[in-house]
Length: 267
Image 1 (tube, rainbow, N blue to C red):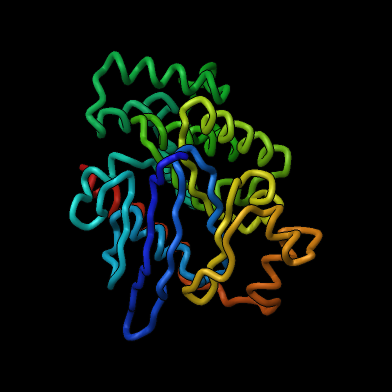
Image 2 (cartoon, one colour; image 1 turned 180 degrees about the vertical axis):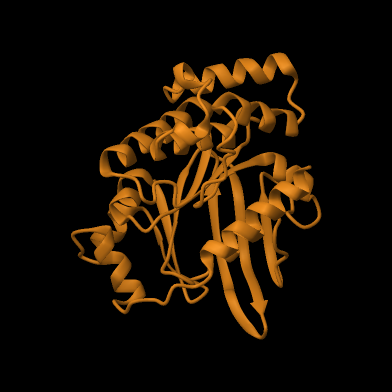
């Protein structure tokens, strides 16, 4: 059996007397593609912040690649890559320069870094455009480049926050082809969020649905559909989370703050 690279037990995070995360538990196995789903404000972003060392839990146990994000944050940060929902590349640098900067930031030796950049850029079909300024890249090309950057330093886990948001269906399909390829070739664990239920249904081996800070469903998408007598994962999702429209919270601002804090800590 694969060992777990993420373990969460009775995790609680309280803000101003309110539980943003309320006693959740789940695990993610090595090499698994795991979908973490929920409506706006359900607790997804808070959970990811705790897993990626940006927030301390109020209580509970968390392990990422065998390390405690609070007690051993440096080793946790070296264990994962992350692709943010909002763009995070430097548009005034070339694609290659963006990756070079990232590799230097992680202390990768020059020869290893450049071989890795070439191999990964070829894998996602960007090598021929390596010298182009990122501002001339399409949205899908930028996403591919961000994924390469996220795994450049050989992490065990890749966190993807809405990795195909705003992309057309064809590009979304290609992005997931690349992610699955990397998952297989690198034995890379993928932890992702998405609001595209059909995407989660096709890509994830298992999912967890969080709502109001609690895990309300967990398991294989096909098994959950069978259990709920549902024709789609979207029907399962709505059965557990309801049909009302959720107010947008400050997730975009939270993501920007998360990105800034993460890069600051790595410098």
